[in-house]
Length: 153
Image (cartoon, rainbow, N blue to C red; front, side):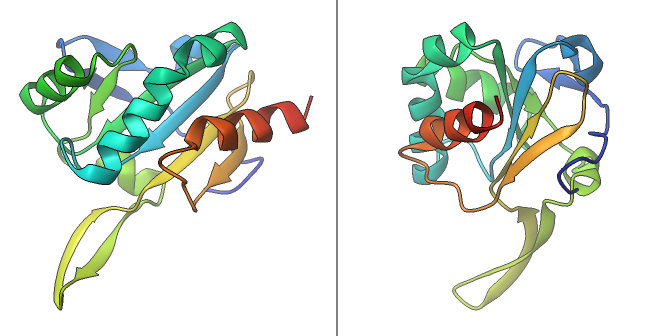
Protein backbone atom coordinates (compact mmCIF):
# COMPACT_ATOMS: atom_id res chain seq x y z
CA UNK A 1 0.00 0.00 0.00
CA UNK A 2 1.24 3.43 -0.92
CA UNK A 3 0.29 7.01 -0.16
CA UNK A 4 -2.86 8.07 -2.09
CA UNK A 5 -4.05 4.45 -2.53
CA UNK A 6 -7.56 3.63 -1.36
CA UNK A 7 -7.24 1.88 1.98
CA UNK A 8 -8.64 -1.67 1.78
CA UNK A 9 -11.79 -2.00 3.84
CA UNK A 10 -12.05 -4.81 6.33
CA UNK A 11 -14.27 -6.35 8.95
CA UNK A 12 -12.40 -7.70 11.96
CA UNK A 13 -13.41 -8.69 15.46
CA UNK A 14 -12.10 -6.68 18.39
CA UNK A 15 -11.28 -8.02 21.85
CA UNK A 16 -14.97 -7.89 22.86
CA UNK A 17 -16.29 -9.74 19.81
CA UNK A 18 -17.56 -6.57 18.07
CA UNK A 19 -17.11 -6.31 14.32
CA UNK A 20 -15.06 -3.26 13.36
CA UNK A 21 -15.07 -2.00 9.79
CA UNK A 22 -12.91 0.75 8.30
CA UNK A 23 -15.89 2.18 6.39
CA UNK A 24 -17.47 3.15 9.72
CA UNK A 25 -14.76 5.78 10.23
CA UNK A 26 -15.14 7.89 7.07
CA UNK A 27 -14.82 11.56 7.98
CA UNK A 28 -12.09 10.83 10.55
CA UNK A 29 -8.39 10.20 10.35
CA UNK A 30 -7.69 6.56 11.19
CA UNK A 31 -4.40 5.39 12.63
CA UNK A 32 -4.29 1.73 11.63
CA UNK A 33 -1.25 0.38 13.38
CA UNK A 34 -0.07 -3.15 12.74
CA UNK A 35 2.07 -4.70 15.45
CA UNK A 36 3.66 -8.15 15.81
CA UNK A 37 2.38 -9.54 19.13
CA UNK A 38 0.53 -8.71 22.33
CA UNK A 39 2.57 -8.61 25.56
CA UNK A 40 5.95 -8.09 23.90
CA UNK A 41 8.25 -5.25 24.88
CA UNK A 42 8.08 -3.11 21.73
CA UNK A 43 4.37 -3.65 21.20
CA UNK A 44 3.64 -2.74 24.81
CA UNK A 45 5.70 0.46 24.55
CA UNK A 46 3.89 1.42 21.34
CA UNK A 47 0.42 0.72 22.74
CA UNK A 48 1.16 2.57 25.99
CA UNK A 49 2.52 5.58 24.11
CA UNK A 50 -0.71 5.74 22.11
CA UNK A 51 -2.73 5.25 25.33
CA UNK A 52 -0.87 8.03 27.13
CA UNK A 53 -1.50 10.42 24.25
CA UNK A 54 -4.94 9.16 23.29
CA UNK A 55 -6.79 12.32 24.36
CA UNK A 56 -4.77 14.58 22.08
CA UNK A 57 -5.24 12.17 19.18
CA UNK A 58 -8.97 11.93 19.90
CA UNK A 59 -9.31 15.75 20.12
CA UNK A 60 -7.76 15.95 16.65
CA UNK A 61 -10.46 13.67 15.18
CA UNK A 62 -8.08 10.71 15.02
CA UNK A 63 -9.26 7.13 15.59
CA UNK A 64 -6.70 4.55 16.72
CA UNK A 65 -7.05 0.88 15.73
CA UNK A 66 -4.40 -1.71 16.57
CA UNK A 67 -4.10 -4.90 14.50
CA UNK A 68 -2.19 -8.12 15.12
CA UNK A 69 -2.72 -11.81 14.45
CA UNK A 70 -3.49 -12.47 18.13
CA UNK A 71 -6.96 -13.68 19.11
CA UNK A 72 -9.73 -12.00 21.14
CA UNK A 73 -8.59 -13.51 24.45
CA UNK A 74 -5.01 -12.29 24.00
CA UNK A 75 -6.17 -8.82 22.93
CA UNK A 76 -8.54 -8.55 25.87
CA UNK A 77 -5.79 -9.46 28.34
CA UNK A 78 -3.37 -6.99 26.69
CA UNK A 79 -5.99 -4.22 26.59
CA UNK A 80 -7.05 -4.72 30.20
CA UNK A 81 -3.51 -5.07 31.55
CA UNK A 82 -2.49 -1.74 30.00
CA UNK A 83 -5.86 0.12 30.11
CA UNK A 84 -5.88 0.68 26.36
CA UNK A 85 -8.75 2.99 25.30
CA UNK A 86 -8.81 1.93 21.64
CA UNK A 87 -9.83 -1.30 19.87
CA UNK A 88 -7.38 -4.08 19.16
CA UNK A 89 -8.43 -6.03 16.09
CA UNK A 90 -7.96 -9.76 15.50
CA UNK A 91 -6.46 -10.61 12.13
CA UNK A 92 -5.89 -14.22 13.15
CA UNK A 93 -5.56 -15.49 9.58
CA UNK A 94 -3.33 -12.57 8.51
CA UNK A 95 -5.50 -11.74 5.49
CA UNK A 96 -5.87 -8.02 6.27
CA UNK A 97 -2.18 -7.78 7.14
CA UNK A 98 -1.44 -9.34 3.75
CA UNK A 99 -3.75 -6.85 1.98
CA UNK A 100 -1.83 -4.00 3.59
CA UNK A 101 1.49 -5.64 2.70
CA UNK A 102 2.78 -6.00 6.27
CA UNK A 103 2.59 -9.80 6.69
CA UNK A 104 6.10 -10.84 5.70
CA UNK A 105 8.82 -13.41 6.12
CA UNK A 106 10.98 -12.38 9.04
CA UNK A 107 14.22 -13.71 10.47
CA UNK A 108 15.22 -13.73 14.12
CA UNK A 109 18.22 -15.53 15.59
CA UNK A 110 18.66 -17.50 12.39
CA UNK A 111 15.05 -18.71 12.27
CA UNK A 112 12.55 -17.66 9.63
CA UNK A 113 8.84 -17.23 10.17
CA UNK A 114 5.97 -15.18 8.84
CA UNK A 115 4.52 -12.35 10.85
CA UNK A 116 3.54 -8.71 10.95
CA UNK A 117 6.16 -6.09 10.26
CA UNK A 118 5.41 -3.11 12.53
CA UNK A 119 3.85 -0.48 10.29
CA UNK A 120 1.30 2.31 10.71
CA UNK A 121 -1.08 3.54 8.04
CA UNK A 122 -2.73 6.90 8.46
CA UNK A 123 -5.98 6.93 6.52
CA UNK A 124 -7.56 10.26 5.65
CA UNK A 125 -11.14 11.48 5.91
CA UNK A 126 -12.03 9.98 2.52
CA UNK A 127 -10.52 6.54 3.15
CA UNK A 128 -7.29 7.12 1.25
CA UNK A 129 -3.82 6.35 2.58
CA UNK A 130 -2.46 9.67 3.79
CA UNK A 131 0.91 8.37 5.00
CA UNK A 132 2.75 5.20 5.96
CA UNK A 133 5.13 4.98 8.90
CA UNK A 134 7.53 2.08 8.53
CA UNK A 135 10.21 3.21 10.97
CA UNK A 136 7.96 3.29 14.03
CA UNK A 137 9.44 4.90 17.14
CA UNK A 138 7.50 2.86 19.72
CA UNK A 139 8.19 5.33 22.53
CA UNK A 140 7.19 8.43 20.53
CA UNK A 141 4.73 7.07 18.00
CA UNK A 142 2.07 9.68 18.77
CA UNK A 143 4.51 12.42 17.72
CA UNK A 144 5.16 10.68 14.41
CA UNK A 145 1.39 10.44 13.83
CA UNK A 146 0.61 14.04 14.74
CA UNK A 147 3.52 15.37 12.68
CA UNK A 148 2.31 13.42 9.65
CA UNK A 149 -1.30 14.55 9.95
CA UNK A 150 -0.70 18.15 11.00
CA UNK A 151 1.96 18.75 8.34
CA UNK A 152 -0.67 18.13 5.68
CA UNK A 153 -3.19 20.53 7.23
